[in-house]
Length: 311
Ligand code: G3H
Ligand code: 13P
Ligand code: ZN
Image (cartoon, rainbow, N blue to C red; front, side, top):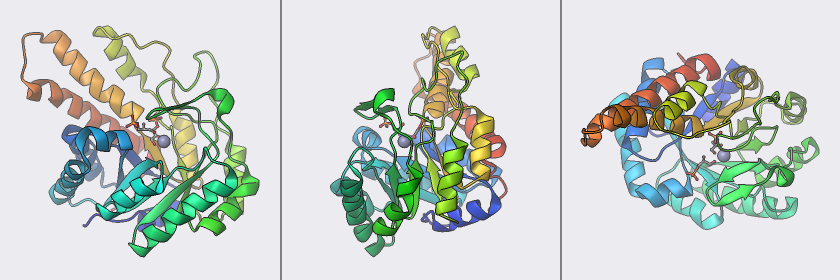
């Protein structure tokens, strides 16, 4: 199975009432953990790369590692740019072999978001690459941008048809209450996604794939493991998994998860290092991190996304 676009994946996910997991990758162990889990669960997968990941690992290393994972597992893998900030970074990823890019114009006004997104769509489609756009603004931290709750805004269903028609995007990220990072909600509050907005948007865009960012659940067992081994994570709270499952059964075809992977990896590494202070072999401490990533992704695929046994 080659590196593929998400077109076929999303079509089947929409019709089948499940979502494909889009997991952020930064190094070999994370890529191996995710793809081994997906292969065992027989699930399609999106591996997404942020600007920060490209800066850390270099584009060519990540691309080659993903190609190696595809050769090793035979999985259909979509390679996606997460939160492309401008035309140039999208072009660079398209030219460098990615099959999907996100152009994140959500912080611009409607007209400028359309102009920029269309510019990327025109170039991407000419090269057989698909594009995710975004309308509405999530709170939280992305790369260097920290969006406060006051500056965030839900997606306006009245804008989605015009945006999709004018830009030609292949999928649309929307804001319905999720946010980036590990501190999405205040403990003691009752996290509630705006399913009414999702419902309204899917009525306006029948059959069109919707994307949910900021969808980590902030798995508490990993938070506790980090804290029990010298960590100091307090009051981290994410999106309830039953709400993600519900979204996956609706029009949401792609669910973005990064923070949960970070917690899983860090919990494995931290626990090992704390208990084995004299062991300085990177393979020894990265292995439990990779195993945690694999366990987490398998859990998400089977119990949250519902994408198991789909290939
Ligand atoms: O939405 C942002 C992702 O979690 C990527 O985070 O930019 O720190 O790699 P990053
Ligand atoms: P989380 O921070 O909830 O994992 O969201 C990741 C994300 O949306 C990447 O684009
Ligand atoms: Zn995101």
